[in-house]
Length: 329
Image (cartoon, rainbow, N blue to C red; front, side, top):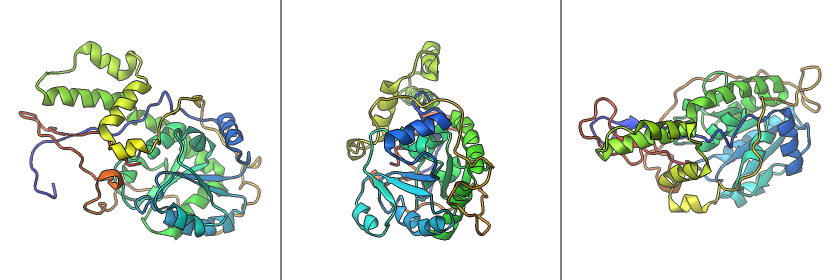
């Protein structure tokens, strides 16, 4: 719209394969931590994504000392590779840096809080995968993240604000019950982002663009899940959306055990903060939808742009072109 392109359009949001990413209960969290070699009960914040300026792990690192001061037993794991990794590692003693993984499910299951401190985004797959795993999200109030982190699912904070980010993380690490309640709501909200719906809508729009008419009923039922949507279909939809450079990054792959169950947690027996954590200072937990548009010109692997591949639909009424699902990883 900023470029003056006029005409109807249709939005197809990213999706998550909820057969692979399911709610991880307390037992699943413990099992994931055992596999990862993490303490069973330590409050854990996890950030998964490329270590780049876009993803703003530098802001997260700047915020972490304030969290650690309130909750000394808390841990932060930054999972991913990128051009900023070496410089960031030198500035963050005590933070665990983990190389990029082909399958993030164990790290999401192990977390109490998933953090997305990005400066700009598209619709990040990490956010959708965290929701499906039943994990609350602390993210920046920017388009893409604000669309996902609605009230009751976590907290939105201003971009590039370490103090606000620290407050929102500490509020959930100090009081795990808050994170668990939001995680249960997150798992329910993930139903709106099921990859089956994404693929079905993308197929319908593609046929319309090609002048082939509606998707046949049998195909529509299969795409909607009745025919068994599996990882081959999911991989195909991602291949449409991801550049060769992003696919080479290997952020998805690997089968492995599906984590299932209801959202659980590691709250202290008396419902208070975990051992080693002392609540200090009121931490905000509000979330509002909105935020400023990301910077112009973000494209390619570092993109996260709002528009990606628009095709005008001749004769369409009201909805018209498609933005294919894109991986902002």
